[in-house]
Image (cartoon, rainbow, N blue to C red; front, side, top):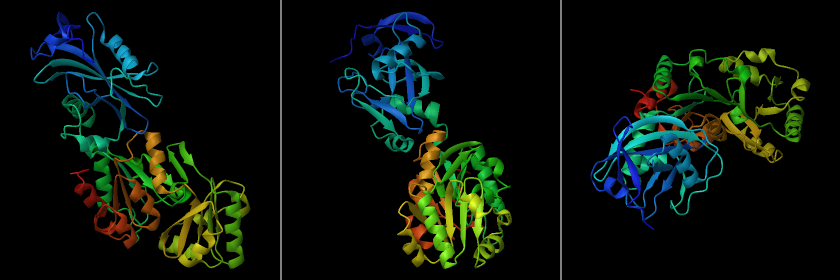
Length: 431
């Protein structure tokens, strides 16, 4: 199969006004006759970009990956009509909302095009044309960056992506931060000024800032210095995620596992924090909650804890029992629907299976429309492991536990030694 070299294209000036006509063969012969084309970049809600594979019989860039939809404007056809036709013919899409992005002149050794660039977000079915394309798939942004200048992508696509969508995107990330020991110093109970400075610049440069903490919302009270920069929250180790007033996901612990843990704490006399959807209950027969959370972590909100029977009427998102790692293993064997994430030697956080910070990143990516591979996560404790592994770049603080450092892509300095500032500079997120 070959392109019809006698097909008539309009010849235009750089403003898009038709000044003549020429055949496909004439336009692609090195004549540099300017002719118009339409492009559509199809993103999904996860921020991935669909690319088509050009068939081997194409006279231009055969076998390479290219813009999702691209085609010439027929003589006498408007750019808008051409876009609708090409999208229908190449991908079988009729229900989409295109957004105009740019118009520019592209020039290669063989042709000169006036390109009308559009984009859309689409999660519906795709039916690549068997006669026009050699298939296609969604690519993460990182995959696209890795394929640049490797003779995998068409030069036209590479040029257009950099022109219209990159613009520093490579250094713009969705950034996820644990609180205690990562954003907030265990020594001062405050966010270091260097961290405030770093996050302010990262936000100004186009990155997004998200919190990823084991704390329930009621005790996230130590972020005043950066609260205005935060785009969303992963709380209770991923069991409750939200952006503004909109809930992204909520995954409660099955009631039978909640009652097993509560009964065990009451029988064996250890302290337990029970986090409901609205309220928090505290069982503290040993004084461990008061000693660690109020005295060591400067958490005062537990003074307003609700009665246990009130919280047990709600969805329970997290339980924090104060016991040893050895006993943790014994209890988890009796909680088949739960996972545990320990970030302190004296207690652990128990959530439902499928609720962890890493899955919180995926839920936030779906909601916010960014590429999960284009994320950076910062942490210091065992409950940060899932997000350090899930993120495109996982960073352990210098004060992190050794097990987390071994899993991380990069180890920065400690929270008290400008760790976040240094890491964001290292990865060119900030200057």
